[in-house]
Length: 322
Image 1 (cartoon, rainbow, N blue to C red):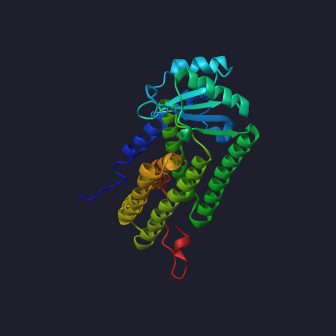
Image 2 (tube, rainbow, N blue to C red):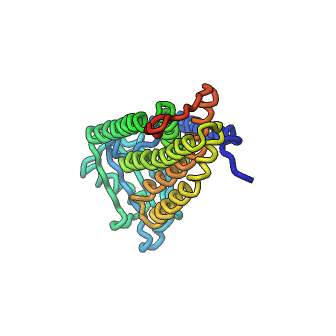
Image 3 (cartoon, one colour):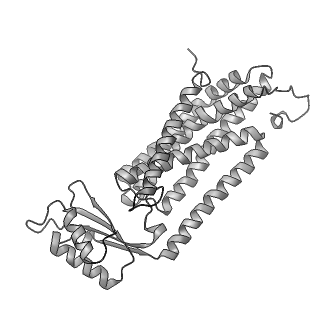
């Protein structure tokens, strides 16, 4: 039996709507959380401050034990850092990640000393301290938003010239779908696991946009080719044929890319872990939206508006008329 994306389009739309709605709810909850106050949990890159990461020194006797969050909060309160973000990390809960207001060298030393006295000695080789000023954080955030806006605008202009306006609009909808899905997943991860988004996350979103639009353009090009070959055929059948002809290519391209990304996610280290995860989520969403969202929306719109497909005259560049 031949697979038809058009017959099940209500199912594809419902799946996407449910995922996006869940993501929007998660972002709304994040916004109301006093320790986040944003749709996604922002990293130091965007809000500025000091991040300290420690791990207990297990080479010392009776020092390697799970960290007591209450004891950590007590130390932070005594140092005037009661509003700081605290996260116990590691499978054995022997690592500690703190995000505070900007601290100078003396304040960081006093905090580390107080924590060591309260919960145990830290391994020097595992200690990480980063500080980003609020001005730089704001500039990074503004630059990231500007980059996303310009990429959306540039792609929309390109698609409008490459295809007709309805093609471009639904390709844009598919791009927006992929970004919303990725944002929703990371908003949820920020709530349940404390995952933060940094400047690499913006890079991931830009990469996702480029990957997704490439898949959509391939399908739309095939739609135009099928229209030229079968000008009297219904748009639903045309879209089904175009999707089936490009399905193998889309799946193969996505799978080979995901194999590399999963390798980076599993073995690439902490710095690249969530960058790779963002790409994994976005590329899967991009392949899905190109096949099941952009194509079915175009067919739905053409059917709804009773768009008549003209038979191009001989000698005219037919690819520009459909």
